[in-house]
Image (cartoon, rainbow, N blue to C red; front, side, top):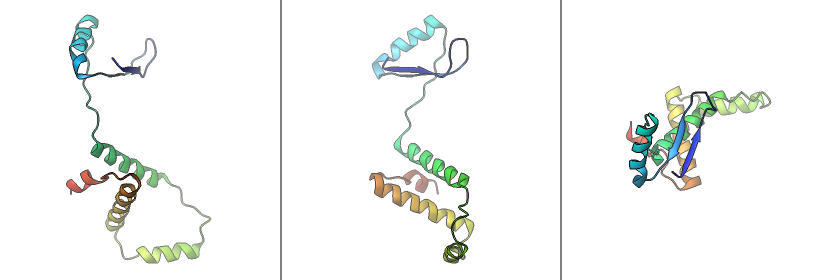
Length: 119
């Protein structure tokens, strides 16, 4: 067993996460029988699901962002003029495309591929 950690302390309920290698699976079965514990297998997330999750976290962060009341009304109106013809869905699509483009350039990854597949 290479790494083990748990989310609760003595007497409390929680999760224990253990990272194992393929050859250790048999030992895990023995632990289950000896300790009377059922282990659930969780696969390591692939890069696409990590990228999807990052985009969702970005969207939630954007949603929680408070308006900056120090930005001038004039500038706000100029920016609104740029976007006035877009629907909410079109604006969201453009923001997501911009996110993918920015993160693809920043990390060299293929961020957003899974989002494109699910259209």
